[in-house]
Image (tube, helix red, strand yellow):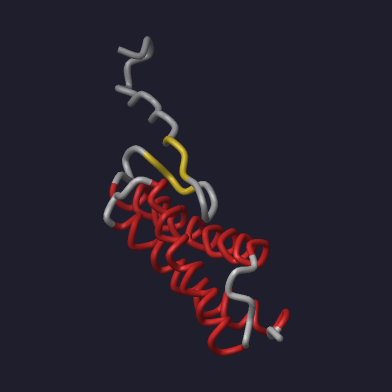
Length: 122
């Protein structure tokens, strides 16, 4: 009964996690709010439970397994969302933001005042 770790990795992480990552990217590309990850990942987790039930004779109504699947799927969707959002902010507003790692961005430092050549700075 059930496929164990191989089933979790193959179905939840690779198949549905990949779909969740792409879903997170799509939400970020269309500037949707991050809270929308929760209901969409819930639907993916329900589908994941059905696939596990149909293909590997998994338990369809196990709440603990379902919660673990939902958490993994939501985490991958959140990663896709944040990576895409960070990339969009630094590409669309390069005068305001610069990259701060794969998941973040920061405000650019203010530019130094231009020197005019006068000794007193005028």
